[in-house]
Length: 298
Image 1 (tube, helix red, strand yellow):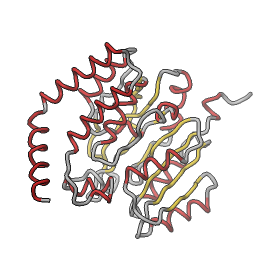
Image 2: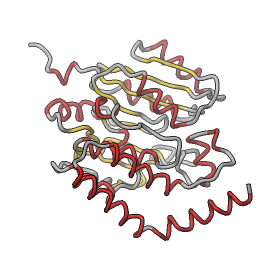
Image 3: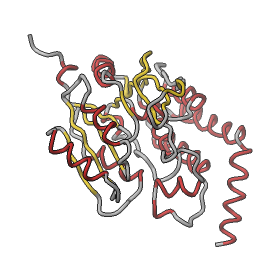
Image 4: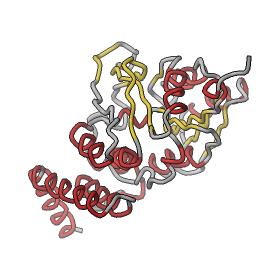
C-alpha cells in the first residue's frame, strides 16, 4: 500500500547555532531520531569558536540528511535563523534550537494537522522547561491554540497570551512564513513573527508535551542585560540606542498596514495596538526616556 502524503512529505528542520558545543549533539540527535524520517537537517554555524563545527561535521558524515553551513563571521542570531529558512527545500519547515530537545514524535504528530487543514499555518506541541542536565522544571502553558476563523480575533488572542514564543519551534507552512518579514535584528522579533503568522492562518496546539526548552545560564534569554540580548540578535548593534518594546509595537503596526485585511479589520487592529500602547505606558514611556538620555550622551 502506498504511503499517505503525511508519511512521505519532506520536512526541513533549520538549526542555527553559535558556540553550542555543550548541547548541540543532543539537539541534533533529537531531530535525526524523529519517527518521521523523511527530513533534512540544515545546520548554520554562525562562526562558532568552540567545538561546534567538529560536532556538526561529524553528524554530517554520519547522516546524509544533515547539511552543514558555516559563516566566516558572526552575523547575529536573526540572520542565522533566517538563513536556515532560505536554505530549506521541504514541504514544511521547522526551526530547532541548538540547546533544546524535541520528542521523537513531534514532527509525525504535527504533520497530519497541516496536511489535512490548509488554513492552519502552524502546529506545535506543548512545552516543558528543563535545566542544563535535562531535569524537568515545570510545564509552560503557551495558550496559543488559535483556531478562530477571524484573523483579527486570532491576533487579539495572540497579543493577550503570548509570552515565551515557544510555538516558533513548531511545524510551519513555509508559504505563510515566506509572507512574513521573518526575524528582525531586535529583541522580541519572534513575537512579531508569530503575530504575523496568526494573521495569516490558524495555530493548532497539540495536547501533548513534545518540546523541551532548556533553561540554562548560556541561553540567549537567560537573565541577560538588554544590551547583551540586542548584540545576540545583531552584533552590529553594539553602542546603539535600544528601544525593543517600541520597536516591537512599531513592527506590529507595519505588519497590519502590509496585511491583506479589509479596511475595517485593519482599523480594528490599529485600535487594539493603540490600546496596548496605553496599557503598557509604564514600559514604553521609560524606554523612550532612556533612549533620549542615551542619544544625548552619544
